[in-house]
Image 1 (cartoon, rainbow, N blue to C red):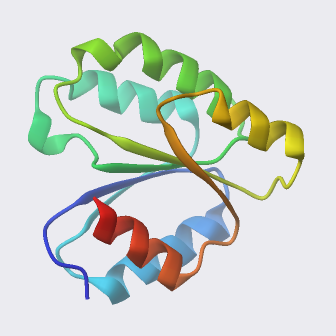
Image 2 (image 1 turned 90 degrees about the horizontal axis):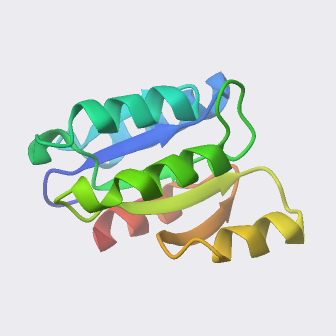
Length: 133
C-alpha cells in the first residue's frame, strides 16, 4: 500500500494502457488521485490552468511519446516554458512502447525527465515511483 496522497498524471492515448494504470492505482491505494489525458495538449492545458493551485498539480507525470495532436516531446518543450511559474516539483517519467535507443537518448537530454520506462508498466514499478514521490 502506498502512503500519502499523491496526484498521478497519465498522458497517453492508449485506452488499454489507461485502463491498466487505473486498475493498478486503485489496487495500490485509494488515496491516490489519477488524472488521465489522451494527448500532450490536454495535459499541458490542464497544468497551465492549475499553475496557481499547487494542490491540484500532479506530483508525478507518466508521459507517452507517440500521441496525436501533441506528442510527448512537444509536451516537454511546452512544459519547460512554464516550469518557472510552477511552484511545485513535478516528477516526469517517459512511459513508452518505443525501445528505440534514439528516443532514450533524446529523453536524457531533458533534465526534467527522471527516467524512461518501457510499456507496459507493472504494479511494482508504479508502486516504486509513487513511493519515491
